[in-house]
Length: 260
Ligand code: 13P
View 1 (spheres, rainbow, N blue to C red):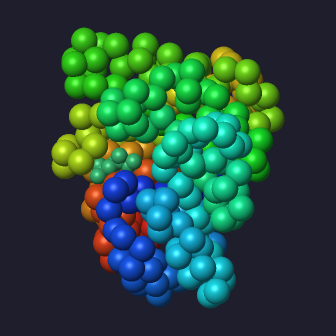
View 2 (cartoon, rainbow, N blue to C red; view 1 turned 30 degrees about the horizontal axis):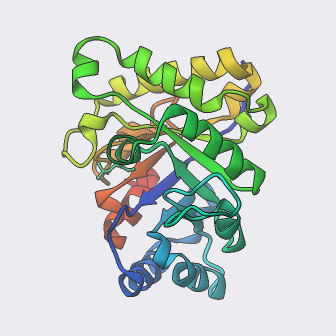
């Protein structure tokens, strides 16, 4: 496999937390806490709720803060009669760089299917943004030994029909559902094993070069304390952080995993 250096990507998924006032104060604190050496070495994105995006964009752009703006979800159509949905074109207009797709909460609570994940990923790419395609197994699936089947199926379906050169630039996130918001983290070895498996699936569907370039995040109760060990794993290229991303000091501590 070609040797490629993958810049880590640490992403904060705020889920349905922080109104736009809280978002502004959190992002201002984060901008103050992160140093140039942090953001030179690590890519950082924040994914606030839709109603905060414009406010956060304004803060980031006014002060040239090297944090990328992200979204948590979008529709795949550019416009139309889709009450309540948000167009990927609107996100692109706000200079959104990354959009999370197929988060387990969207799959479980809002019926997002593998086909929708695939259609959305293609739409996000079309609008010049990068999808963060999520996968992960339930506790029952893990205990039944079907983690690879589940995660492999989600990745194969999610990437179907996407050109290898585009797959190379994608971000994938392995988030075991039983580790999300529970305080339970996959051991670094387990997380590494599944991320390595995900990379092997990418190699199978898009070739060795795409697999060597694609970034794979781990998510599920990542904190400043466990980030260094997780980030030291060869196939873990970043973190998708929920709870600990809500507090600027906690999130900065994760971004600064190299100095821990
Ligand atoms: P927690 O970090 O709160 O476990 O959430 C993980 C997650 O779902 C990020 O998308």
